[in-house]
Amino acid sequence: MSTHDSNPNASSKSDLSHVSDGPVTDPGSSNKIGDGDAAFKGQIKVNNKSAGVLKKTNRYRSRSLSASSTDSYSSASYTESSSEEEDIPPREKEQKNSDGFSDFCVRNINQHKFGRREIEIAEQEMPGIMALRKRAGDDKPLKGAKIIGCTHINAQTSVLIETLIVLGAQVRWSACNIYSTQNEVAAALAEAGVPIFAWRGETEEDFWWCIDRCLSAHNWQPNMVLDDGGDGTHLMLKKYPALFKSIKGIVEESATGVHRLYQLSKAGKLTVPAMNVNDSVTKTKFDNLYCCRESIIDSLKRSTDVMFGGKQVVLCGYGEVGKGCCQSLKGLGCVVYITEIDPICALQACMDGFRVVKLNEVIRNVDIVVTATGNKNVVTREHMDKMKNGCVVCNMGHSNTEIDVNSLRTPDLTWEKVRSQVDHVIWPDGKRIILLAEGRLVNLSCSSLPSFVVSITAATQALALIELFNAPQGRYKSDVYLLPKKMDEYVASLHLPTFDAHLTELSDDQAKYMGLNKAGPFKPNYYRY
Image 1: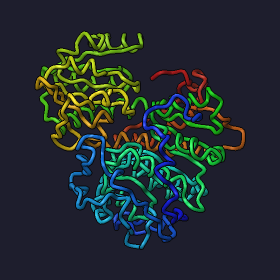
Image 2: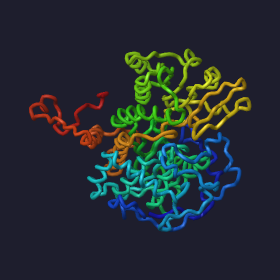
Image 3: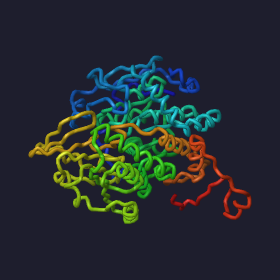
């Protein structure tokens, strides 16, 4: 694996000035391993060529965001090993791991031991992706794959990254969210020789610089993309269109990123096949539902210590994420209201015992507002002006556009940092709302995720990459595809042994009667589960 060109001017600020973090209408137009992981040792071979460090001016270091954006530690980091030790931004530091490898940029490489322990803990709770690593490790189905990754960087994602390497891939990785990186985990990956560019509390300019460093490596051309939100795909298409046309496939796991892909396809600008993992059964029905059911409570408790019993909550969006959030909030005694644009989802909410309302009808009385739509400006300044004192506002959707946070950055309002990712926004009359993670994903910014559920998504992503990379010429055209049903079932089967679950097998006569193959798939593509 070659390293990045050492030219310090390879990616200047002006190169990235046209890139926006929000959803776009048309993106196309404008080797030292921990002792507990001996099987992984030796899988990563890197060139120790030194990477240049781009010097930033003081203007780059200044933040237009609130003080919480400079906070470098994650509430998901129990060791607090990511706490900031110095004021030097990561991009201005010369960094090397124990082997002299320098093709990375993290907050503090010295915290790699803490990160390795967190990864090892996650491995114990991720049976599916670990089983896939064991079963396919010898076959190396991703040998020759050069994967650009742009995802959340935490202990669970690290298990996926290292699995891809064991399966034969070379990778370069950056973060899809400026607040969700666990710094010690990023350090552990860098210590293992993974070219990773991410730290918690990046500026917007840092964010795009990190993705660009993954894309523009010297003597290293990606042929696959694993994206979460579409930012890696977006930057490649905007800045490196020739590179974009040469890749074999894209795997996308978020609703926001999938929406961008469908926009590209509709405009005739998607020149490579893409796999929509977000709408696969194993992602939608497990990660979106069960992960959010647990993590919404975790994140709100850690950041606000709020008592849920009797609180009035409005949940904007009753998709799988909204359903999961509502289940746990209702279970703890909250009075839950739903806002919806889709009559089918609205009817589901009614049948589940929730009142479906317009946001303006309840905004003056609710104690907590949660968005989960994937849309923009769902909660506006007008809504926030009407909120009562102490209302908690947060977002569970991927994009940071659901809450109009920019409308709060006005001279008449005062921002007061309370703790990591928690801001009080104070009105002239003294009223304050509690804004979490500045409108970004609250569960990944303010808490951790249940590793077991992430294992399901990670296995799905790995299989999607294997499928696209090894597909014969012509199987997939330049369009967006759902994961084959057989793969969904395989991912589920990898996780059943954890529960000592035993599947019933069809007899030959039963299979014939149902018109099924005894080995599956067992449901047609239109089945909703």
